[in-house]
Length: 242
Length: 74
Image (cartoon, rainbow over all chains, first blue to last red; front, side, top):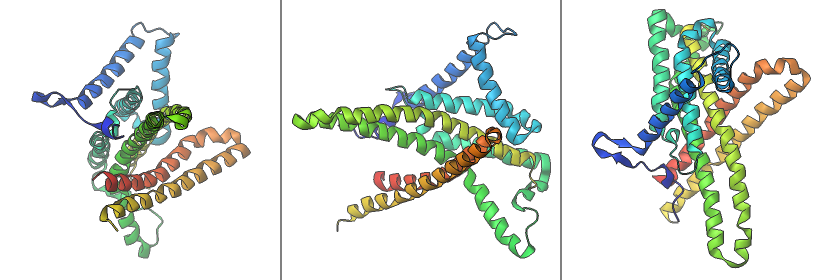
């Protein structure tokens, strides 16, 4: 029987330009997003049709999240946040289709997304506020004798942000898919055991179905969490003083 | 004992941390729900914050999972 982590194996499709199955599904996710949004908004109307309504719901959802956390000023980051949300959501949901590759279950992909976010925060923060951006590490209203420790803790917390942002998405996807594969493996091994044990085989199958429903929730939720945390970190770049 | 056995023991021990993270996440949503039931009109505005807290608490449990996976598969 196949090992549960075999599904994450990267296979080259066009070896010359290092085009792998991961790249294929990334391109596929982007094609679905761009094609879907263009199809949904092909004949725009004041009263939206079904497709346009879906696009508008997605748009308004991200606008609401961004405006609530980063304020009106944060709207200049809307293209970045909206692209990140749609890419992570589509990649997560793509992975739930049987036989499809989950792009976000590889830490290099999520780490690149997290570095993109934190890079934007640092570059924009220094470009807009200069050295005042370092005020992010010095909370106001802290006693002076406590300040050195607080600054160290704030610096560590800032440095751990890209790590936790990427690990959260990666590990959620990885753990979910491994759990699905393990329960699917139970069905096979119970059937292979034969006799009375094969009567029990539907039980892990039911569990796999329930886990699949949970994975749909987790896939959407992790895309949302990634977006909200991106908005919060961008808010720090916009308003560094505590 | 076989050194490889300690690897699996360590992976199992690392997973205890995930149970603790589960307590944290449950605590956040439990308190959110009890607050939301007292004042349902204010719950929508705090929905995102509940998820941020849950995500941060969950992230620490995820670190334990990563430690377990690193122990198992390297």
